[in-house]
Length: 350
Image (cartoon, rainbow, N blue to C red; front, side, top):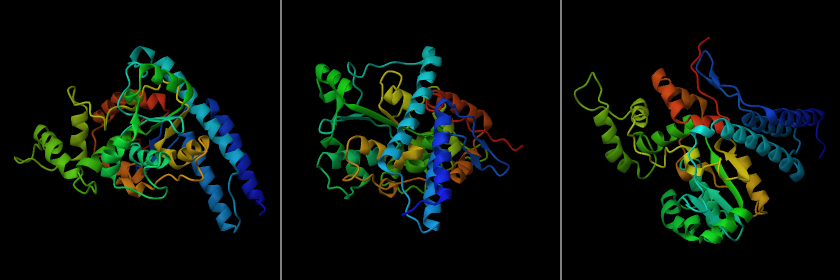
């Protein structure tokens, strides 16, 4: 089927845009007069351009898709730019970094797939349940296309997957030298909000939310009581932020920084995925290992989605957080912002 001139033009613009952003470091995102978040992050603009091209093709009754070579070249360029931002951030932040040699001291959050020679450092609230489901499929524990409950994937299902600590030091060194390694990041603002909406928000659909609310939720509300009420009120998002910013706040893996979870300045990852471009990045990884025709990335609905990356949802919750706490929150996750090219959120009304 012929591609229209408009689509061909858009494709050329996209390729030029990718090349221009190879050395680009994103500028801060802002809220407009209506507090609508405007992203300046080029990866998301690339994703939107691809989406717009596909929409235009459908409206023109034309079939349009990137062939495999185009797709892989675009994603290879995106990865180059992400790694450049990471390497620059690691260099500039060298005096603030903690370090870990995973081969010597393997963390518990690194899955190893010997069959496909793949390593995955997972971070909670960054699509890790969906990726665990993919690894169960890759290793024959789950039929492609079938799904499991979030609880089963993260409990009994996870026990079927091998982690880095199960290997000897010699084996781990071989693995790091020969297997493809990947990790995923997420905008710290949406990740923190996702923890709250999934675990502590009264409207959560997470099946174990009540346990979190009865334990952690009561602890937080007892610490941060409403000044206008003798009784403890419900756990609000600003209170959760205040709790995270305490000097002695527990270092729970659900809100531990991505940097301190996967140590990207110490491990040379082949792919740095982003939650914001999850579907495209997952497709790229599956193509790299030759499994894109048999394995399809699970839909978000299968893992209690919170929609915490939507601009209107971010606005609803963060507009209630005091400005000082917003600055402190940025400082807490500063490495994640700087190393992965995310922008500080500002409430500019100009």
